[in-house]
Length: 164
Image (cartoon, rainbow, N blue to C red; front, side):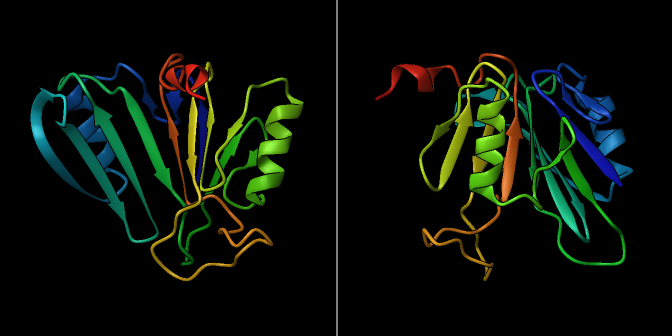
């Protein structure tokens, strides 16, 4: 299965703005789903739909409690199916993290590298290298590959531009 990351539009099969009920139906086709804070738009407890496949997870964020606002894809685990998560032809989870950031920068994108986390404001991507299990490490001591990527609307990470 291939999933194309298409910020700021969403990911394959899950466009940003997708209604909650349509999202739940589509996510159930990927595997078991868990819904938390159904319909909630509370700041610290907004609605989330977690799609649980034996080899991967996707967290769908519905900050307004009604429509898809962001999708967070976690690195696929080994298993019988071949999963590839791509952005403009780059395999996001099979390209070493620092190489991936270099390739994004070479595309003219603004890349903010905070070692364990990286952001591409304006597009909008958020990456994490934080892993909850043993993974290959890079020379900087961090996981060699990103462990998750969040795709959000165009201005999702723009606040990072004013930090510093």
